[in-house]
Image (cartoon, rainbow, N blue to C red; front, side, top):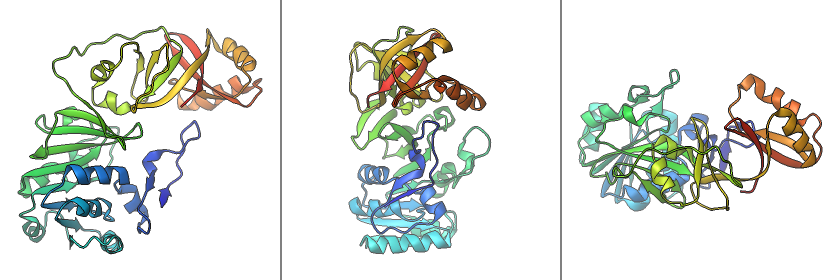
Amino acid sequence: MRASTGNLRKDGSEMTEVKKELENGFEYDEEGIRMSTPIEIARYKSERLKSDTIADIGCGIGVQAIHFSFNSRQVIAVERDNVRYEIAVRNANKSKANNIEFLKGDAFDPQIVKNVRGADTIHSDPSRIKNGNSWSLEMLSPNPLNILEEYDANAFSFDLPVHLKIENLPKEWEKEFISIKGEPKRISAYVGKSQKYDISVITLPTKERIIRNSEIERKFSYSEDVKNYIYEIDQAIVLAGLIPEYLRNFKNIEPILFDSQRSFLTSDSMMADNFILNTYEILAKCEDIHDIKSKIKKLKIGKVIIRFSIPDNLYYDTRRILERDAVGENIGYIFKIGGLYYIGRKII
């Protein structure tokens, strides 16, 4: 089953943050599906956090708790919302997850804390209370710091907003950026015996991982020489600060742009990697808008996608200008690097 709110990007593709696969027959409510763990992450976390007894604090509609039940002997699932508690119980019954004990109540209710005592691992995927343009642990409910204070366990796991700055997290926590098919989804923070790395990025479903290496040079230079191909890489690599580690994997690839929205590399020959989100072949180099329009016509491009930063209120007007005399069925992707424009076609 696939659930979606139908949000679209400017290029017409649907945002995967609100498109989630559910196991066949799962029930959900609108808030429950929005907050639920993507199946790929639920499977991965179930394997990584395999325990004798694991507790899921704030289990929602039960996706993660049910997956925990496949690899751990006993699961304790806590949910305070009456509707989602009932849905989680029904979803567990449909999945034949008979090793889950459901508790209805607040995470900090003394009786709940007492009943969870003895769990080897505590997991929590807190609700997000966004306020402004930044995230902090205080905006999460329940706050992971409060979970650590109230609960006694050998290992903890917290699923956090992917754009929460890692410098705002305790230095001793492990920070793992999780992506699905090249798109960042969340930070998983680990405390205690669940820790394995310092900072890393993992992409699912392949489970390829980049791990921070504190011994390598962290400075790198940008190239303004765009070659035959441009690659858009997983933004989680940038968020995690692991660009130097990623670049060490390749000999003939150069960075050309990294910002808060997109990360581009370039090379002469085409390469493949699980952290590459999109690959573009460069068709033409242009000096200005008039040059772009002329070459778009020659390349028989009928639709233009702008792949450089531009104010939202100018995006569609600029597209209309570029497409005004365009003919053909091809799609052209426009990049701006070092003051020049490049027209590319999407290969992958």
